[in-house]
Image (spheres, rainbow, N blue to C red):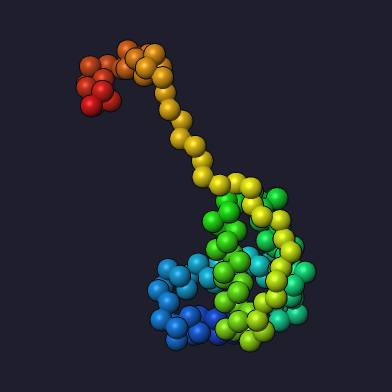
Length: 128
């Protein structure tokens, strides 16, 4: 990530609000992605339509989970509320349809087939 006065300002505000280092890092990464997505335009020149476009892009093209899309939305809310000093309005964007992944569960026959293919030591560890 390139160094800039704007990103330094965001870092300072996050530290003033006592955000953790990991939160600060995550916020900077999302804001950087937002800026890059909009061909390096400064966020103060971007607003409702551009924010909605970015969030829709995350859901439709990148196919991120709804939690990830929500995280990006919260970061942008922080950016506009606390850094640019322009509260966000109600946005119209496509919600992510990707949620929790259902775990794969093997049948008894599939488990027995896998265990039968293992050597003694591996079988013992896997069967536990």
